[in-house]
Image (cartoon, one colour):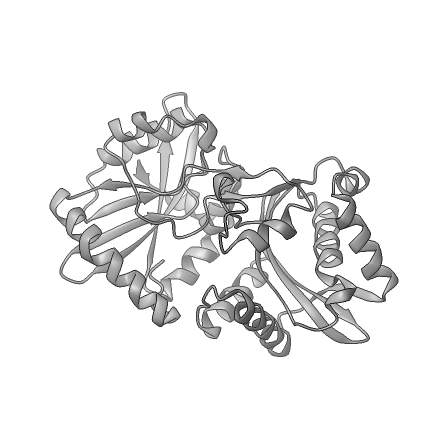
Length: 347
């Protein structure tokens, strides 16, 4: 584990896209620069694995008063094999990082992971995952005809219904008016689902930054000129993510969200994107149990019913005493603050 060199920093996003996982938008330069506006310091490293491969990793670091630094690698480092993950953890452990803990969020499939091995590396399962550890991924590589055929019958029916009803989908510019509309869509959705929203400024800043970096796009579904739903997607290399979405509680009988997602996928395929991560569904054993994300699964599963479940976040304590104190007090205080004041979301 070493700091990235100047030549590597100059082509950082290219290195991220070349990682074994195909890259992740939360590992890009623009995401690190955005998080720097919200209390984090991006630090970029390169891991040199024993077989000669390199893995680029962006760590976000922030200082906790009276305790020290916490290190968080969002959706990284970019490996998917347990053996690669173990080697990266070992390299991190001997790198001499100072602080409380280093939190890994690599997308290693949970099915292949030996948790006893992880604990043998000194890792501790984090008491919370800042993001979701389960998702649904739509494979776009086969092309539009095959992708559409893979949807559920009800999804295809709802797409046709929206088209016949006059719903139109278009990519839109990040104008102040469009960004405000998107935030209003998200507020309307949050009012129904009650999941908590960060401040308006937070969303507008990263929407603008990622679109300007050429790594994101905003889409609206309209009917008779009226915006019904919106989606903000990000993409790196051949991967894309359904980062944000929302809809107003009007004309829902037209099923605009189904056509919106399909047109987003068609737009991505035309640009060579091969996978579309729908982000954020319940873990497999939680489906149908009343989990708050059951509604999300009911919608997203129409495009692919298979849930991809990852190992979630694992912490490498950098100081045993400080880490125990953080688990007892720090993380809980941060979580309570975020529940009442979303602008205080730690991660």
